[in-house]
Image (cartoon, rainbow, N blue to C red; front, side, top):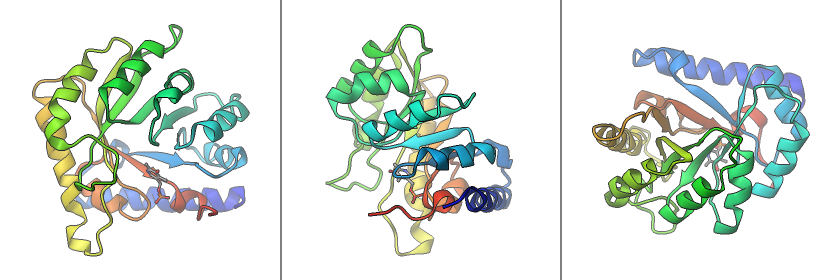
Length: 231
Ligand SMILES: *Cc1c(COP(=O)(O)O)cnc(C)c1O
């Protein structure tokens, strides 16, 4: 997909975000667009950066490391790791990323904290919640979330910022908002005891409106910006 096409898509996504925010009386600036560039080349990241985006998300470490190196000249770019995390990948993730959205175990959080390089600020993290109760999905169970959040908040080289979820797809439009509402409620409850929780990472290309209606502060958008991913 060429740069003009990506710029046009970003304008459309911005318009969707604006409309969804205004519909529920929110300021559009309270919703950050994270451009999910997985499977797309560094040139696509450059095009989105040129069109004004500064936050990019990746799922696969090897691919991300190459892309981060290839775009190192882009001043003010921020990289977010949003994929499943294996223990043997934490050192590289801690070294190369500004944010991690997919922390769902204390063991992984401890490693990220221990391995965060001294010369970088604390790593910003969101805890991924298994909000739809899917047996096969990653994410901490809601019942185990308060204990995990309290433990992660204590880790010196992490900055706990909020929650992330990928709900099961709903055929029923009216039910799309329910899992997002549950995630927002979990964040509100945690906020009663933990300071600084300001991030609700929820909503993708197909459901960003529902997520924004329930309070998303960051929407993770791949397809609507970069086009379909090759299989
Ligand atoms: C791929 C991915 C996205 C982007 O999905 P689209 O439907 O292409 O917008 C968002 N979040 C996560 C965790 C992903 O893996």
